[in-house]
Length: 117
Length: 109
Image (cartoon, rainbow over all chains, first blue to last red; front, side, top):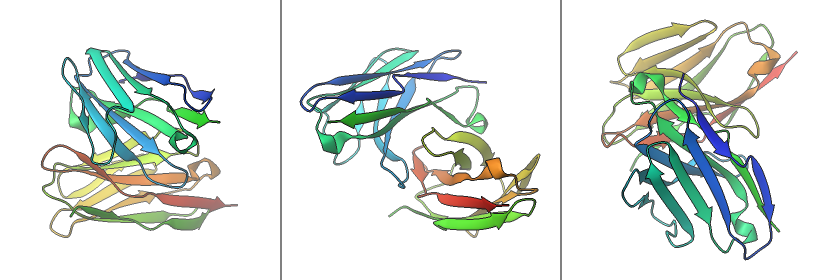
């Protein structure tokens, strides 16, 4: 089945620094990648939708200058958390849809646990 | 607005059967997904329903009634490893996934 590889799995960074998270679709081309954030005991919150070769679409309340998304190729999308603060500490997950069909579901990366100290 | 409702938490006994309900109100409907998420991990796909009826996949079954805006996930022969959160998500008319808050399932021996 479709596989999305997400790195790093976890990262600890100092307040004010930037962190880049990568998601790669390994055996399919993902024209669209979804980026989610999940706080403890809460559901997934869609942050933005990235489309290969164009600007990402951000959800209301998500700062596009803080959460930079790049989708330069059909197999790679990146999320950069700039000038991270402790409140940005969360579980970040990417997801893509295998173009072979909706019935196969949306494949998720393994997630990145970000802790800002 | 768009809304997905599912119970916050359920408890069941190992070997038993449990049904997790999900009701939805969305702008359009292009299918409903169930995902399993263990603590600290990403969700994994369980099922997709777009037509009314029951879809069976091993110990797990998923049911959909579009007229009632209702779905359930049925888990049989529960095992301890089934302890997880179960997320209901609906694909709306814009092919956006709308997520429920998830149901935490606790399995007791």
